[in-house]
Amino acid sequence: MNKVKIGDKVRRISDPYFTQVIGTEFVIKQLRPMGSYTEIQSSDNLKWYDLRNFELVDAHGEKRHVHHDLIVAWAKGALIQFRLKVEGEWKAWTDIKKPTWTSYYYETEYRIKPEPKPDYVSVRDVALIEGAACHTDEATYTSKVKYTFYGETGKLKSVEII
Image 1 (cartoon, rainbow, N blue to C red):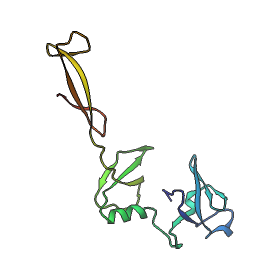
Image 2: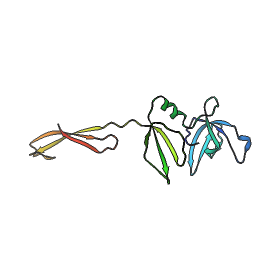
Image 3: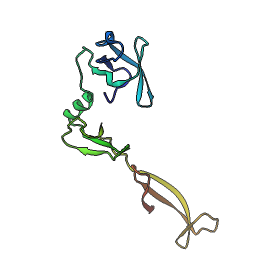
């Protein structure tokens, strides 16, 4: 099981030591990464460590696909992106029109494509002497300069004297 969050309902599907706990369901109260494992604190304050021993279930106890929420959003028209972890490094997010919701050779993550960040603008007063910008009292006149930055990168997009 890849992605779980606080409040999710899970069912124990295996346990190498305590077979009597198989089938136990609980709501996740706390998650804490611990190396290759994640500590799960259940609603009854028990702690478990290996997410592979659990499956996600819905509120009625039915097994739920690990990407259930994303699949529903995609069915309603949301744009989906995925990325792969290759040789320990996550690759860039890529748009995908028909997600398979599986991972064959590499660890895979899916997400709803985030809305692009809008460009932002900063307007500043500057003094101009013979066409050159400066900050002295010898200015011939003052003007405003409008700086526009790309929302995604924060890099300068354009400069305009207004």
